Amino acid sequence: MDKHILIIGAGIAGLAAGCYARMNGYRATIFELHDLPGGLCTAWERKGYVFDGCIHYLFGSGEGQPFHAMWQELGAVQNRPMINHDEYQRITDGEHTLGSIWSAGIRASTLR
Image (cartoon, rainbow, N blue to C red; front, side, top):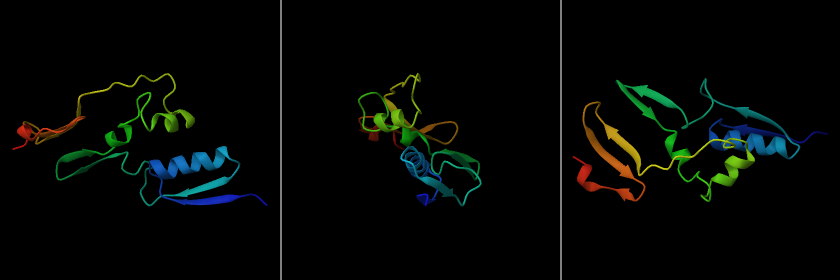
């Protein structure tokens, strides 16, 4: 009898679980409520604003960082350069920067 895993959610964790299941000889079925896979690693629009949630999944992915080994095992970072930016995230109203999150933490002076 085949070993079969059912996975709820096609976010990064669910997709990674499915890949690891297959890499270890299991059949895997992933169920996702949304019409696109990716979970928070997708962008969505609400009230004229675009929210790009995926950047936090790349945080810590550079060589020597905590998630790099996982991305290597899953085949996601081979021959892809990682660019490390000082600014991690910017909050804007489309014209002005309302705040920024930096790799060293929030700079309160940029918040209004």
